[in-house]
Structures are given as C-alpha cells and as structure tokens.
Length: 122
Image (cartoon, rainbow, N blue to C red):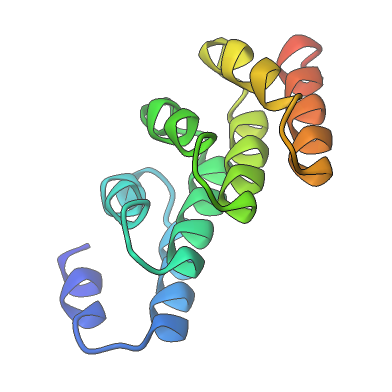
C-alpha cells in the first residue's frame, strides 16, 4: 500500500483517478486510502474513490458517503447514493430517503434504486 501512496505524489489528476481505480481492485487493504481520497479537491478523484468504496462494500465508508449526499455537486451526490446502494448498510436508509427529494433527477432515481437494494437485497 505504501508504494501506491508514494507513487501518487507527482501524478496528474487523471493518473490519480486511474491509480484509485487500480487500488479499488485490491479490496479491503485500499479502504483507508480511498477514504482519504474522498476529501480530495478534484471531484474526479472523489468520484473514483466513492465508486471503488461502493464496490468494496466496506461499512467504514458509509458515514463519509452519507455526508457526501449533502455536497453541492450533483455528481458527488449521485455517486454517493450509488455507492451506498452497493454497500447496502441500513444506516443509509434515512439519508437516501431524503435524497429521493434531491433537486437533480439522476440523484433522486439513484437514491430510490439504492433504497430498493437495501430494503430488498438479492
């Protein structure tokens, strides 16, 4: 993991996004770094990190993703709702229900789909 962290220092945002995608494939060992990446200034980095966390399904990411549902950027709210649906943690039910009234139709639809995943798991 440390090798990945050191390798990111001199990279451009697209390279960092690609590194995050690769880290997401490592699963649980990548979670701490991905949680840090949720705080990056570049929204592309935050989006990639949120998506990777959703795929990993680690419950440590639920609270940070819930807080991202209130972001001013609709893309961040969208990916947060999507990732929360992938994770399926019941703590997200209330915040996702609130997101069903989001001003953006894609966020609303994704929040509803996420709620359905949590309420009726396969």
